Image (cartoon, rainbow, N blue to C red):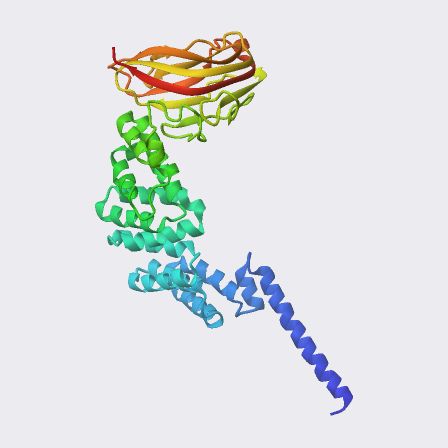
Length: 407
């Protein structure tokens, strides 16, 4: 073979390769917007085949075409789960449920992120009472697409009212602790219709292999508090405390401010507020290791941001504690206020202003027998109008107690 012929053959090979590359490139360019055009350029383009098949599967008259295109795609990419979903959808459209089931199951295995396959299988299993399978696919969807919580949480919520569905739901949440569990429990605890079923879902999870976290238990407790079920909420709060904390439980939890705030249940809640800094700090004179300290930055602050829920039985009590003031500047001062959850104020301490070394204070009050099922203790600014909210300086508190008066 002469050199001229060799060059000619090489040129033709390069030209053929270039043309092939160009056709594939044109097909790639059109596949997203016009898959039919992409197939003109490259008839076996897998993505274009699937896109065209997906469109055809929605039309009963094009069912055979959709299946043929999907099988052509499978010939090129045998593990393409999406192609099985197209075959399943075509079968579903024409009423061939057994074929649809087989191919949706294959699609879910080979394309585990395919939402349509999981959604169909959820509905198919739930309608037949196979809640284990339905929950398997709900779990898969929530793991791959957490943004679907809004659509899928009501599905889970509807299962709580069905004993045959609730059992596998509790098993799934308690034995595997899926990543969506806390978000679902929070959502469920806030639903108006959930009150009768709170114990059905939260109760068994208390002793599950993966028991309720402190945060999850807090969802339950907060809902019970909202419903006025103070005794039950208080029991659940105490039950979750470590043994060493339970030994020192009083009418006030952690009156020495030795632990970080719980910000839930019956522990201290330190709420963020502009113009003040609430924290705990060691200083000479404290009863334990540290005390509560609040720094005010000479701004107007509608302060009521240190709180604790209480569960006092009816009776007479004395709130006592110790305080230290470092240049606390406000027209009316801070005070501790006790209020029943249903409205009435049942006690207010002295107003704290100015300067002092550590000193004691007391407040006598009575929890009435009627209309005071739960109470809240709040450190608040005694301001009536906006100018009275201007406050600066520092105040400390330690050794808060509420003792029953028996005589």
